[in-house]
Image (cartoon, rainbow, N blue to C red):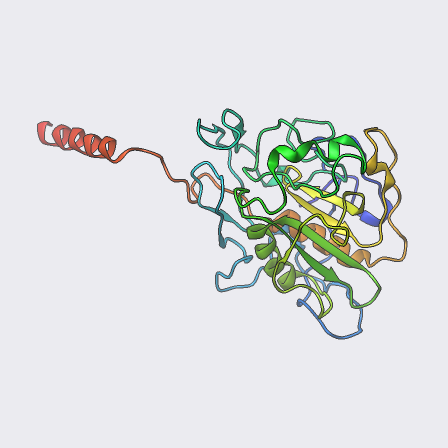
Length: 319
């Protein structure tokens, strides 16, 4: 998936202006052979770009291309997403009795996955900072950051409507994180999202990118504590700000202001940009999405189904 104007992440700033614009990763090289414990370069070998949906491990494991990813929580009747899936064009209104009743759910597709570096980006056709009061174009809820009022700008914390990071009602389960380190430079990235998404992305990233042997193999809890990734470390949001890619040691102070036009702090020049591009491409291509035909349960009462069957039987015997 080519993202115009930002082919080289290390040389481009992501605008603070929110919305569905693609402020993240462009097309990079190919896939590599997965995690490595060697001290050799972490560059990817030539081949198909991760953002084209290639590589994922075979055998139907979670994170491989087309693999079904079970998703619990408040999903409006949907039961599974799909790694490398195309997304859903169906928009439904969340029914009464469920969290956020009346808001919209669904309607976004794979080509709308990329947000920018701004929290609140990635909502198709809906610009602006923050996530308060919004619908769920990808069904998943936005990530929530720790801290609370008094730390950073208010837009970072108006999300308390979505509960704490450990909220089990969140689609995909509580928020989790995974660390991916370079084996050539002192560079570590984190993926922050719900449990189902992080689990799937660990497998996809392992299949596509060369990472150090101390990188995560299972999701780790995210509590918004002082040692967890922070919003000023985010280098890219995806899927309506429900996934964040962060860089350890990065301090984008512009993210802590309410000024949507604040200039982001440039990324450090000594990071492993090959790994960054691979992570960005892979997340954009593989992050699980709900599809129109994937795990959507129709909430039709049993009595209604029996009545429908009876009508069909009558019609077939009268004709």
